[in-house]
Image (cartoon, rainbow, N blue to C red; front, top):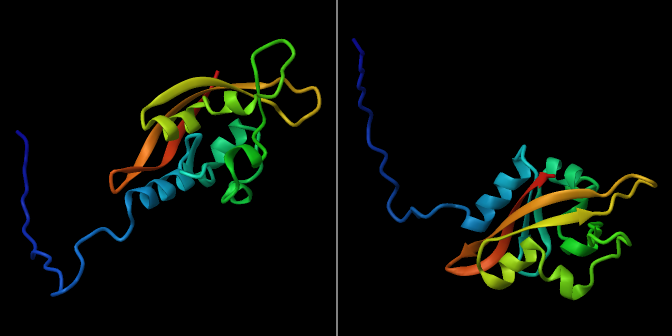
Amino acid sequence: MAHVELSLSEVFTPAAGASTEPEVDNFGQWSSTVSHADEPCLLIDADTKVVAISAAGCELLCLGKPEELIGLPLLDGGLRLVDFTANRGELTEQETDKIPPLLALSSGRLARGLLRVQVAAEGAPDATVDAISTPVLTNGAVAGSLTFFSGV
């Protein structure tokens, strides 16, 4: 037979005039979550600057340390994307606008796609990752995008 125990405690009542709103907005909560995540993930703001990236995300995308990327534009922070042709040409600006993190920003919708990341090590094969991005809202407006990555 199951045993159920119930305990009662005093109700917490905030002091008069104290704010009952959370201390951090939605974007701030995601920033903290991504920074501490074990999964490869990335949070960028509406200006495409890196707000947070997990250590696993840096490793999968062949980037440096997370703290070195914070505040840098996503594509100027060392992320080198190449096309899927045999020539491995770097993506043009029109092509990079269609990568999931940026597409989620511009469309305000979920975006998914494969990315081919150029590895910095000489002779190393490129990394292919699956990216799933969602817009992150603050006060009903797109404030950034959150992307999860998986190696392919």
